[in-house]
Structures are given as structure tokens and as C-alpha cells.
Image 1 (cartoon, rainbow, N blue to C red):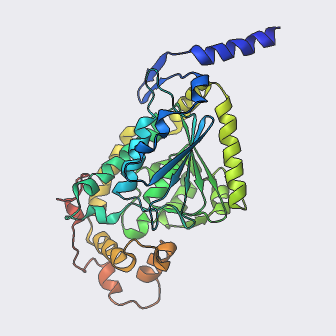
Image 2: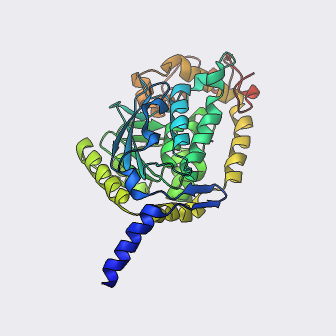
Image 3: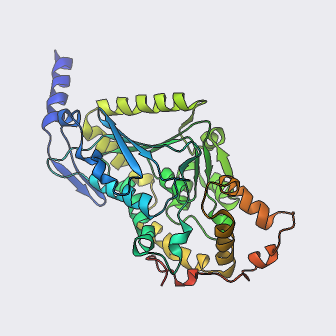
Length: 353
């Protein structure tokens, strides 16, 4: 009788509890379980203005499929859609949101690619120029929204800014096509959208140093051994089946427990102040002549398109600029002597001026 009473009490509590909890970044509405079973305004297709995200809801979980051809580039369109979607997940009185959000990709080769370096040019459009700030804001939302657990289902390439987003989701699972990298050091700058700080918190200092300083590429198995992803699966079908099963199981449980668990574990995250300091340190590092020249070389060779060079970064960039094979103007590139069409010295966080 006591056990039955306790379960009944939990069910009633889950349906009726309406109070809000606020603490720093943690402000949420404890939602009723029954209303979530009938969908969420957060999954309205209008949340994807540029059409780079599609949504499918099953129970209390929403699958978000990323599709921004040709390489799922983290450009202003994808960043804007991601930011707008995350904003809809912020709790409010009388609002329902999914307990779990799974991010996956429609592109067999790419999960989420790197930040669009063309957005840093002087001739960038206003939307492009704002994309860096929106990227930072999106990473902060992944942490501050404690009413939803975020899962990255990685079965393609993720590099640079895309991997920084993945590393700040609550869980990551990899399939056979997963290729994970932070290429920033090979470009002469750093992973400034949280990639460095969260990497240390996730895998430990020594492995983070190995991965970041060498701009190493990790496959799914190696990333699992590093502790960067939760688990590796041998097929895309098994990956999706297991992630869906995990999300469905999490979605069964009362909302207040999810809220408090995610909030309680935030003490493991880097502080917002330390993340802001990282952004400030980024500017002079990225303003070096060598970094400017390397980025210009990359844009000339890859044009951020689905090429063999793009699929191989950072190794293809390391091969061309730092390898033993001769490359025309390699020394000039590394010495920052190639003139650039834009200057990172003018970057102030809102684009180039």
C-alpha cells in the first residue's frame, strides 16, 4: 500500500507541479507530464526560418535533423535556426517543452561542420556578421536550459565550431562514420566557443592537450576511449535505435528529477567568466599575420565545399602547410606574407569593420 501511495503521489506531483526555480543561469518551469505527451510548441516547423532544421516528436523526445548542404556548414543560416529553436525551449508558465532533444544529420558525410570563416570578412552581410555572437549564445543555451537533455548523434564529420556545439551537449554517441576534430590550432587560432574549456572538463587535461594542440582527428572508437563520447555503435541503425531508446526512457520520468540532475551537474562546467575570457584572448591570437594567411589559403583551396580537402581537414591542411611535400608559397603562407582580403585585427565579436 505504501509503495502504491508513493507512486500515485509522484504521478500527481508530476502533473500538477507548476512552480519555477531560479538560480543564476537556471530558471525553469516544472512542467506537467501529460501535456508533454501531446506535443510541444518548441517543435513547430516555423522555428527553422532558413529550413536547415526539421523536427520529429515521439512522446517526450524531439529529433532535430540538420540539413544545410553541402557540408552542414555552421553558417549564419544554421546558427540562426539553431538559436531560434533553442530559444523556444526556454521554460515559461503554461509552456510545454520536450524532455529530450536529439540532434542528428541528414548528410551522410557531415554532422555539423566548422564555423563559416567567410562570415568574418569585411564584406560580410549583417546576418553573417552576427553569427559568431549567436553561436556563443547557442552554446550558453545548451547549458542553461535544464528542463531538456541534449544528445548529439554523431555519424559524420564534426569539426571546429560544430564539435564545440557537440561537446556542450549533455551526451554524445558515435556511429561508424563519425570523424571528430578541433582544427583551430592548425589554423593558428583556438577553439573559442567553449571547445577548449569543455574539452578539459570532459576528457581531462592531458588528453585535451593531446587532442587540441595536435589538432587530432578521432574516429568513433577512439573518441569513446578518450571519454569524448558516451558510446560507439558499429552501424547507423544501431546508433539510432539505441539513442532513441535512451531518449524514450529518459522521457518517462518526472520532469523535476531531470531539471535538478542537469542543474546539479553544472558545477562541472567552466564558468561563464572563464568562457568570456577565452573569447577576449581569441582576438589577438586570431589577429596574427600567420593565422590570417592560413585562413585565406584554406578558403582558396576548399571554398567550404564538399571536396576531398574539406573532408580531410585538419590533416589535409597540416599536410599542405606543415608537411615535407613541397607546396608553392608554403613558406609565405606560414610567414603570413600572403595578402588577405580581410583582417582579423578588426574583429570585435560582431564581425569585421
